[in-house]
Amino acid sequence: MRITSPKSRLSASLSLAGLLAFGSTSLANADTYDMPHLLVIGTPGTSSGSFASTNGWGPMLQQELGSNVRVVPEDSEIQRHRRLTERRDLLLSSVSAAELRFQIQGIGHYATMMPVPQRVIWHHNDTPWTFVVAGDSDLHSMDDLKRSGLRVAQGQFSIPMMTTVRDGLPAFLGMTPEESATHFNFIAASSYVENCRSVIEGRADVAYCASVSSVMAELEGAPGGIRWLAMDLDDEAGWQRFLEHSPMAVPGPITMGVASARGVDGLASNFLYAAPADLDEALAYTLARWFHQAFDRYKGSHPLSTRMSLEVFRDYLDRSPLPIHEGTVRYLKEIGAWTEEDDRWNQEAIEKMDSWISARQAALDEAKEKGIQPGRNNQAFMAIVEKHTHGLEGFRTRL
Image (cartoon, rainbow, N blue to C red; front, side, top):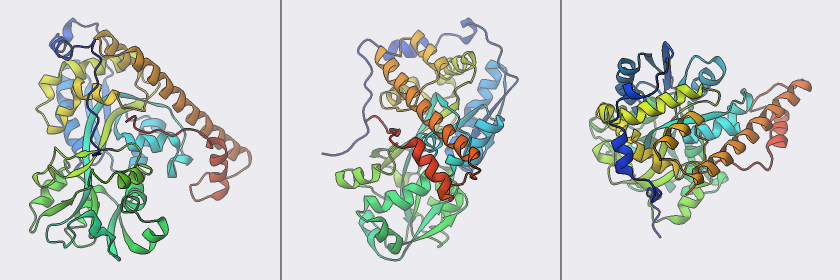
């Protein structure tokens, strides 16, 4: 059976037309709230679709709600997370659901960082991804990647991307980790742009990229162009192996981005606007209300902004494993877009996140007590982390 993205499963009691009609209600008629003077939003780097689309709606929010909006590009996922949760100089972060899973479960370097519970404020986009090669490459299918000695770009700026390339790709191809280690030459890339450009510049044979990022338009227009490798949705066994390493991915055809990618089988990686759980409820409520009610005004500012509609967000809620902020929940309840079933899974998600946060904090406390330096390459520390987190259920898309 062919794997496809799940369709929206709105409750019969919800009228989407009515919900969208509610969006025409003037914000001026809503309860007033004093917005913070400065609203700082972190996104991936300047060549990312997340940065461009946030800059599309940011000026509109500033004009309508009176908060000075500053969009800060930060290619390093770890540094953006640190700024959001430790330094607190970001109020929101555009982050993939996959990255959020790593942050909450303390995977890789995140294990050494202060564990902070987070909440989803609104859906940002569902970015399409797959593997790309140069247009004149003799690699035409995923099966061609089974050749020995291929150079695979591996971005060092995102742990989930590293995991997808290092573990997910060979798993999809049916390789063991040992076979992968001898089969591929992984080429380090310090930024997303460097990662994708590597196939055009001849430093790598294949790279894992998003079809909607601006750098892909540049590469598509380069001499020879680019070509996308289809991750065949009929390959159920391959996808099951892949999802063991990228459990937040949603398989499906690519429908957005550069022309060369459209129609190619790949996956969607949901990006979300997230914040620490202690973000003021009234602020989260006000942002959620604005994202919904102002949608028709900002949806044309960037193609990815069309994925911020209530309909798309509601579809995501049917499969989200991540907790939604209480301010957003309050707004969705007011307009009839939240159900008792949503309350149940959201509470389960909150409890699951709290379990991970508590276990990781206990691991850090024990390490401090024993004088063990936190480090992902410190076996003594990672053993403590494993002891405290063993048996906890990980986050996985609710398919």
